[in-house]
Image 1 (cartoon, rainbow, N blue to C red):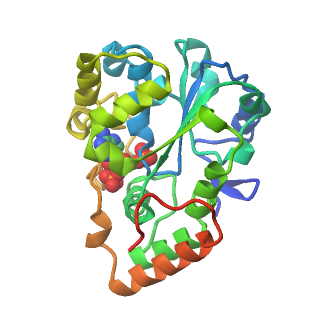
Image 2 (image 1 turned 30 degrees about the vertical axis):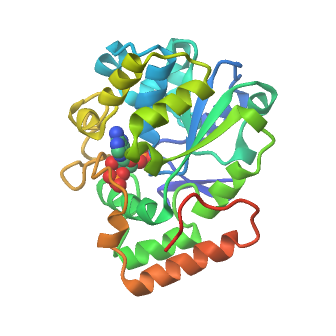
Image 3 (image 1 turned 135 degrees about the vertical axis):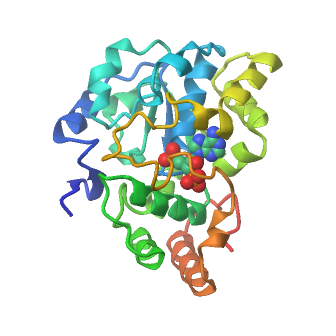
Length: 285
Ligand code: A3P
């Protein structure tokens, strides 16, 4: 489909990625202080774009009112990075959807830390379905049934969910990587922020953690034009069709899956993970 370019077997949207941006990321020089949040699309990326810079700057709120989130913590693989890279404050916050094996050599050589955010794939496919309806740069998703098949086959941006998770579960990063779930963040954001801030070696007071949590809540982000993607032209993202910050809840899949779809979904995903040494943080059924 001509809306995508192919990159090592992955489909990447042409609107946001280019051969040049993919060359740029290969040459990007990671510094030890860089912090990267990695997600499969629709697992909480822009949430991390809001959170990371605030954890790294000690809760200074100015950037979230003056700089759009995609420039506060840009995508490593997207065209925009080259434009803003020199303006990023240090320590730099970045996000990425790349699988581990496509990370640039300088990343492996550095001590840069990674937070991998995982979301229950049943909610990921629902969130992605609505995202395809509103994003003018992605193909029309068709019916939910049709879209779920595409998702399970990996004919969607950044490929199969299971491949992405496997890739980041098998790294040589040791204590440079931390795993967290979207569900954990929804359940208790201050606790999730404390865990991230400890991992990043930040010593943030309870007051600062609470302030960051408040400013990264779904409600606050939804009304902030610097955070809710409403500044993007409607032809690219039409929030009248579905807002980027759509529901922000756990378990919306229950409103979309038929019992046949649930059975099929669980059987495909569990088969692809059956020989894995790790287990998922939630049960799939
Ligand atoms: P829903 O479509 O289920 O609402 P990504 O940023 O990776 O594209 O993920 C988007 C999903 O994260 C959307 O899920 C969006 O609502 C949710 N999200 C973004 N910010 C959030 C927040 N502060 N709290 C809860 N969910 C959030």
